[in-house]
Length: 99
Image (cartoon, rainbow, N blue to C red):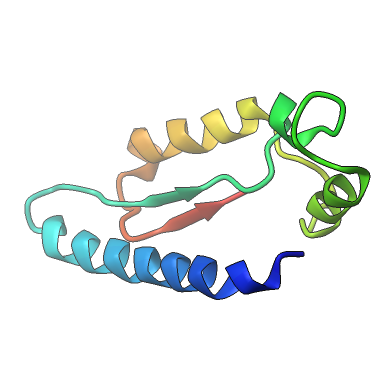
């Protein structure tokens, strides 16, 4: 873990959450929905030690840091985006969809 890089990451993440909430409330009166999609660890070549920059330790840490102890699939992430864009998601604004 690169501890000296965690505060900027956390601060940036906190800022984007506050920004999205504020813009979502501000733009709702115009019918504009603002949400934040936070995909997390996705099963792509980048998140595998054989095909990306991961070491054994990094790959294990990545998987263990997720509540379901697995990577999400690109299809699962596409489904989240499709829901947010659909009629079913029309009452969603200022939401954070994490995977």
